[in-house]
Length: 377
Length: 171
Image 1: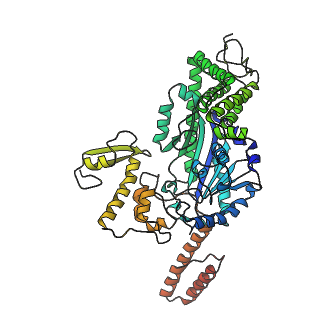
Image 2: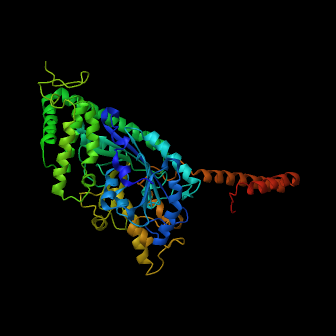
Image 3: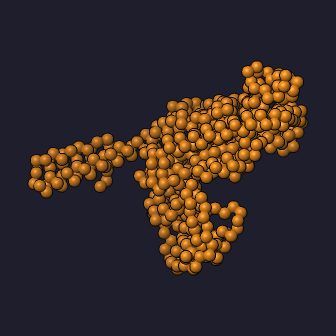
């Protein structure tokens, strides 16, 4: 079986593939909720009943073909830092991380599939893909769900669909969500309007780490709220259409910002780079917000295109638990801020021709075909 | 107009957009205050619709005078538990509390009945169920019209269908 260190060593491909839809869409996630028939839901089950459900489900999940050599662990066998790392990687929910004995997680080697056993529901399965790929993520996950049906009997009602612990997940048990990076809409003060419009058509908007988290680094998650009364395809198609529109708004906002006030844009991105490149103490909020602007710089051509990948990787690596895993010990918040600054400084050092391509009027960007709004020559 | 929660005259009228649909609620002063409608921050009609049931549940119990707190026969989960955690105890609870569920789902989802994926085994089972029903009604008709030869054929078909794939249908 795979070790935790091996699983976490490399970033997953979905963490660095967010160039789709003008770089506005980072990841697509699909989650399906399933429960066993004739077994009480995990939150209501007695300890032995929960253990029995786990005993039934775990071999089925582990023997899925994609789960060959997967990481499979009971939550009680993971340290709090390890659990937190999984949360930061979106492989385990915050609620699940709080669980111990009787709950488990099975994660595919490439971190593209993650199954939570005895979460709020008996089974919460997830597929993550880079960019806007809800459809293909669903196809892959529903195939695994069908594979499980051969050995597990899921609770299903012809009228209410898949039966879930919380009625908000009834029907398809589907939650499709997309992580978006929307600095253009934030800088141009249009974000409120856009998100309100999204909310009006029954979609939920959240910050980086789901329910109740504030939006950091201009990152937003948009997902469906209703899971009953519409097919999976309908839910996904609508979400993809809306995300496409939001990404287009973002792109328009960026173009307009550069056209209307190139100095302001260049100044913001340049200052963000300056702080990241030279600070020695930085908390995650400040780092995320500056990384967001640096990422924008990469998309606008102020910095080479691989800046986007660099930022996406850092986004994960500067999170508190990732820092502690990196340092191999528990860190105080002050220590974390220092190590975070150090990691960011080092990584930016490797940013190709970064010094020449800072958004100032004295140098063209490194990439000849990229647009350079500050090119006044 | 009367209050949606008690029979007093309503004085607070609320309109909110839930899932693109306009939902209206009328309340009396007292109920509005109890449900936090007068607090302009963070109030949501969805909560009220959900809260509405919990109110009814609590009321029902009070009037039952220490009596029947409905429970799921499979797992022992009670209405009281449902009111407290707004989650269910097991799949059977959805049958036990069927009446309470439909008002709960209002405003929560786009529809009231499932459209989409059905477990494959279940689909086969449903198909078989349908086929059996068809055969049985044909059998009745055949017997009624004294067409015993056809009836015998149908009977054999029913027998063979019942023996397939171990998918037993209890009828």
